[in-house]
Image 1 (spheres, one colour):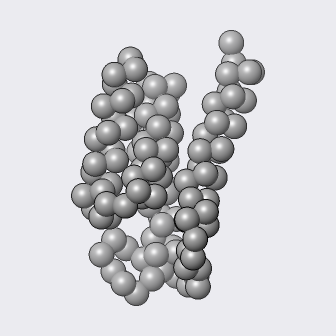
Image 2 (cartoon, one colour):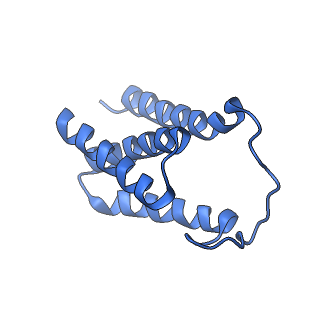
Image 3 (cartoon, rainbow, N blue to C red):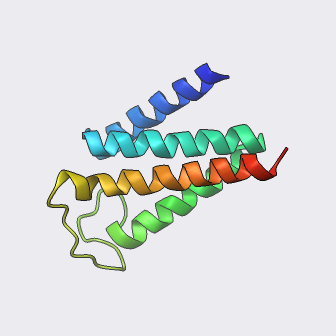
Length: 111
């Protein structure tokens, strides 16, 4: 099963790099997101949970950034421009901690 996780993560990160362009921070974010989505499939045994999570994330992305390929921005305009590596890494650190929190919490209460 670990090979399925690894292959899934690599394919997800490569696909995201193909669509968004390669950068270290985007690849790290894609790996964390891919881990979350792969874990959702593993725990639920269904693609529907994974599809719903991914669709929801795309909707949130669209609200702030507009549709892929558009430069107009979304409904909510932000003025945030990362100025340092630390600020840019926050977008990867927060999802990682969220995944770890859910993972540890679920494994504590579900036996």
